[in-house]
Image 1 (cartoon, rainbow, N blue to C red):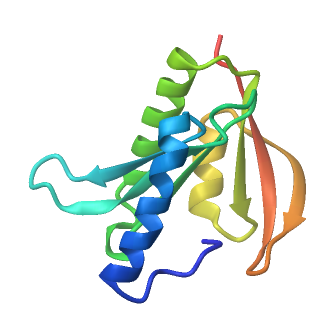
Image 2: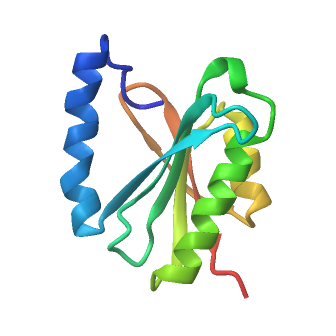
Amino acid sequence: MEWEPSPSPAAFAAVWRGWLPAMERGSDFVFTIRRADDGLFIGLAGLHHADTPAPEPGIWIREDCHGHGYGLEAVIAIVEWAWANLTLSHLVYPVAEQNWASRRIAEALGGEVVGSSSSPKYERVIYRIPARH
């Protein structure tokens, strides 16, 4: 994760309020992930740069919910929505080089590594997820 978690609910309120203008413009979308059977908050999923030909899906899953397939399910839902509702050439999926679970998500969607870059916290690989046919 490139950003640091907010230190308090009040601080996070400032963060999510900052997402609203981008959502209104259609450039970014952020969704809550909840477990279907009991509504437990699982994490967040997003589609960033949605107003470009190559948007970026992304997820954050709380640690105690890792390993249950929630991330894959969320990213598949976002990717399917993007293909159905936006004009895209492909999707871009940057992933921390050592985040094998997220790399498997990109690969499950047909993603191939097309580059790498550095962030302040880690080295990342960049996947290109092709348009579905």
